[in-house]
Image 1 (cartoon, rainbow, N blue to C red):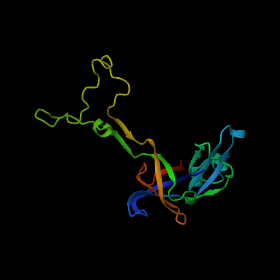
Image 2: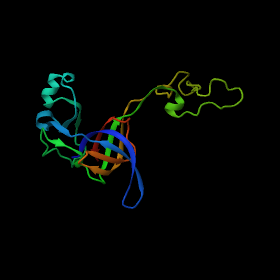
Image 3: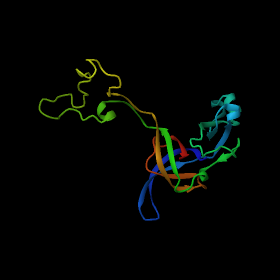
Image 4: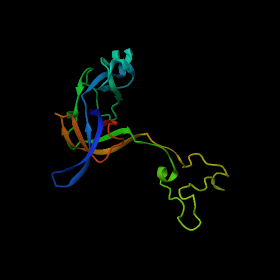
Length: 207
């Protein structure tokens, strides 16, 4: 079972063994501690809780500190997704680092995307907008008609795409590849882009 937390740093590029340049994202992986191992006998399901990131003690409740054994900033729970995965051999208090992955591993990365605030239909959904022709004044980026005579009987159908809050959503990018691993500096380089801004906490798991 491969699972760890990290923070998104910067994008870079690496050359593979064939001399082909690959775009990649650098992820800083701080030492991660296993805070609890859930089993079917006790909890009804199998999962591993992990935590990372130093936190000031006064910002963590006594219950959280007692459960984890220390003050941590981030915590997540991972359930084995595949029947071939097992949590056997993982004990509470164990430390995980970047060495759990190896170059060539296929992974999935989950994180919260950048928040864009309230945006119009052109930016949020890719609407084309109105024609920039004679007679067009202030309606270049307006959504146009949203009702429709026959589609919804004159009312606005549920799920109609229009302006609204954009971003700040959990997104998972699958089938990424680990390009490089630096266990000494706890750094991973994964192919392509991952969600979030610099400093965003990302969940990395093998698939």
